[in-house]
Image (cartoon, rainbow, N blue to C red; front, side, top):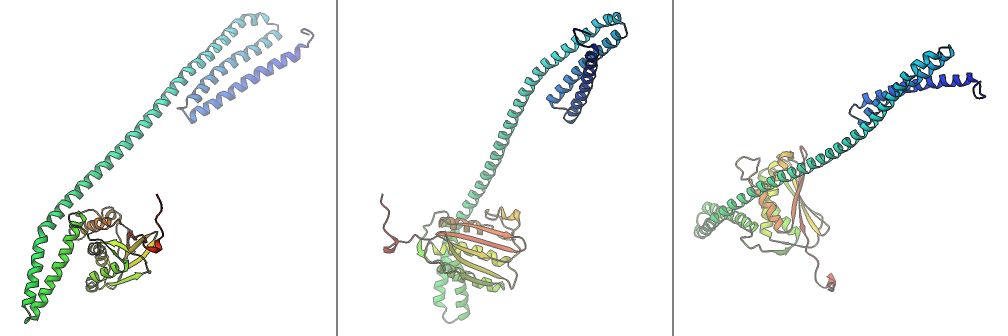
Length: 378
């Protein structure tokens, strides 16, 4: 008996507790090792591994010391235990110091790790900002190159327009004079008529270029969209027939009018339609459609050609860009500029092998007159 308590249960609990402490320390050590192997760079798992190792050493020292004390005292060798007790105590103290050192060291490591994480985040943010700045700079450089290309094309086209405008007018004038004097020769008269018609087309082209550059005043009048579509049809009908392509106009009954310089607008739309005719195989068809949506008239030009490749689609409105031989590459570029002078825009949808549809959007003239209602006050 010890202090009124049987000693046997006390010793049994001491032995069982010591064995359980050793077993739990081994389990904790194994688990910490698994976590460390799973993520070797994780500071927390590394700390748990070293801490578990220190605790396991303490558990072995403490548990083995208790078991040795019980066995030696029970065997009547208390003197042996008295000799080993200081060694067991020093080992326990050393393991306590190791645990304290690991904890203090982890605190410093944790602070360093947090500082490193903050620096990493700052570097990552700086990298993102630099990448965004580089991308913006590259985009700006591309825009500058495109603007320089457009400006060069604009100057060249304007120079050509100025230099050819008077000679074309002279050709048309002299052709008209000769037509009046060739009444007896039908073949000569017919040829002169062709010269006059082609000179008139060239005059329209030159005027369109100058109007796009705002060097020649555009004459805007209220015009029915159907009248523009009809004029466009007449302008391209002959070439479509020569190419063996059927040309259709589908008007959904658009009401209202648009403000347009009809000659310039028809010339711009003509470029789009002629491109559609050129890519349409013989026997195919090109459809000019008229609809309205949200206060705007939509004129569409649809073909069933081979479509536009993505790498071509990105540059299709660039001056001097063309996939056709002996082409200037100015047609669609100036068509886009003329459409924009009408407060309009042009876009397209193309599927390789299925065809392309260009859509030109132009604002309808707001209603006016007695039925339009009184203007708002203020």
